[in-house]
Each structure stands twice: as structure tokens, then as C-alpha cells.
Image 1: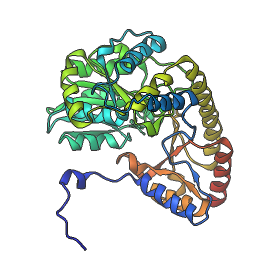
Image 2: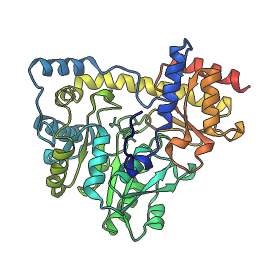
Image 3: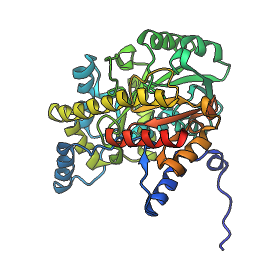
Image 4: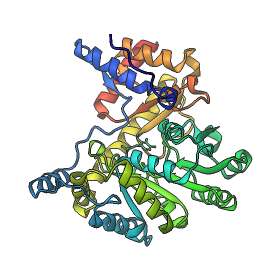
Length: 388
Ligand SMILES: Cc1ncc(COP(=O)(O)O)c(C=O)c1O
């Protein structure tokens, strides 16, 4: 065996996604002939809509295979700015848009561009696990604030004020959040903004699931002011996970720094994906996307009562995204034990809460309704058989 030097501490410090280990086990079981129902995967099962695929193919045929400017194709930056006008009635200058390789690229650029080593960023625990790792990567520190059902699993202005310390430089929220699918009320988000602004910090709002809110149409944080950094993506609502495309809106004054970082870290987001995304924002595609959203809503409405019937306690019904976050206390097992049991005995893959932070993580699991209603029904029957 070849001896290799040690990996850097920042790589060692980053915990692996447990869901990836579960996915790998699930795939191995499938390869051995078992039927596994995937309720762990954080991406919809729907294919990218045909007009988007066709636009991608046309872009390839037209030879659009070179780099775009680091901040993105000018036509796409303009289309994203126009989207805020059409969808939310907010005027946005195209010059504030930075197109990125997924929301992941935006989160990394935001961390690298807005925070110094040692700076602290407040975020909700449970929350999207990569955020704390992005902070680690730039030698900043993510401070997880325990949140529960009483605050809809989101940060509050009071929690931000209480936890703001001498090194705190920002707050990052996802609205709606992963793993809970729950929202921050607009007035609460405005109050958080006021707290952050009063302390001269950055407020970053990840709206990757914002178009997947089922029972209301909340305003975008873009409307709260140019100082709010808003991240979004073509991955979830637009069904383009594998195309790797997202975006970020920043204050005008930040663009030169972010441009430099983007040039150096990525050069640019994928060119073909950017051309395809122009079709994703068209009115025709929107009709198709809304049909998929309606289907996701039906799945949620099927799943919630079933989970309750089986003893999974979803304290706050998810208002958006495609996740249900359930308390499993009554089963007398940790979330990892239960996820293991359901994978092996029921052939159902779910995600243990330990992927999303430390707070009550062993008492919670996440169900992703990213498979068909029929398969979800079968999954519930199998889980019932195992747990009874
Ligand atoms: C809250 C949140 N933010 C960002 C991402 C990253 O998404 P992408 O890089 O595919 O746009 C995800 C993916 O699951 C997410 O759940």
C-alpha cells in the first residue's frame, strides 16, 4: 500500500453525510435484489422538464460550450432579476445577481466573501448540514442555536439577540428550512433583519425551497432590502439538481469582490446549464413545474396523517420543501437505530436526525417525500409491519 501524507484538518473535521452512507447501503441492498423505497433523498424524482432539456441540447448544438463571465450569462442574470419582478413584484437590478454552481456554490462564495477566519455565524440546529462545513472551510465558525416546534424550528429575533456574541458577524437561515420544511413568519424575519442590521452583521436567507411552499405565498427576503443576501437554486422547484446551477443576490457594492472569488474558485457556473435555465424561467415551463409542485403537496397531505397513525410525531406540519421531520421518542430507539432497522427490515430508507445537527438529533428522523404516492403508501405499510 502506498503511504500518503495526512489530509488537512479542515477535511478531517467535516463530518460525512450520514444519509450518503444510508444511500450507499440502500443501493447495495438493491443490487442484491431487495426492493428499497427511498424516503431519504433530498431531490424530487421528477425529470427536468422537456423545454429545459431541449434548451440544453440546443445550447450544446449551438456550440455554447465555453466559459461564461464568472457572474453568469448576462441574459440569465437579467432573467433572474426579471423573475423577482414577475413572481414577487420586486424590482431587482441584474447587476446584483451572481449565478453559481448550485446554491452550494452560492453558500461557499457567501461564506468566503463575507466572513473572516474566527467570525461566527448563527444558524438553526437542526438545519442544512453543509452550512456549518462551509463555515469551517473558510475558518469561520457556525454556531448552531437549538430550535424546536415552539419557534417552528426556525431562529427568532430574540434568539439572534440573545446569542449574538463579540465575534458574531452574521445569521444564516433557510426559509423554508431543511429538514423541517417550516417557515419563518415575514414579521419575524423582518425582526431578525433589524437585529442583524443593528449589529452591522450579514443576514443570509437561503430560499432554495421558497417556490415549494404549499399553503401560502410568502414574500421573498429580497424585498427586505439590498443588504440581505438571498440564495436560490435551479435544483429543487426547477427540477435541475444535476445541472448544478443556483444564484445569489448581493448588495451592489459586494459584486466586485464576489466576482473575483467566483473567477478564482469556479471560473463560471456550467454554461449549458445556464442556457437551459433560461427555459426553466419561461411561462410554459412554469405550468409543468406547478403540476409537480401540486403532486408534492398531495404526497405531503398523504404522508402526514400516515406518520401520525404510525406514531411518528410531526409537531409542526411542514409548510414547504419536501420533508417531514418527526419525533420518534415513543419507539425507544435512537434515530440511527431506527433508520437502520427500517432499512434492513422494511426496505425503507430515511435520514436520521443526526445529519442535521446536535439538538435532539437522536430523537428525530427526516422523511423526504421524493417518491410516488403509491411507493409512499407501500413504505408506510412496511413500516407499520416492522414497528408493530
Ligand atoms: C437548504 C439547502 N440549501 C442548499 C442546498 C444545496 O442545493 P444545490 O447546491 O443543489 O442548489 C440544499 C440541498 O439539499 C438545501 O437543502
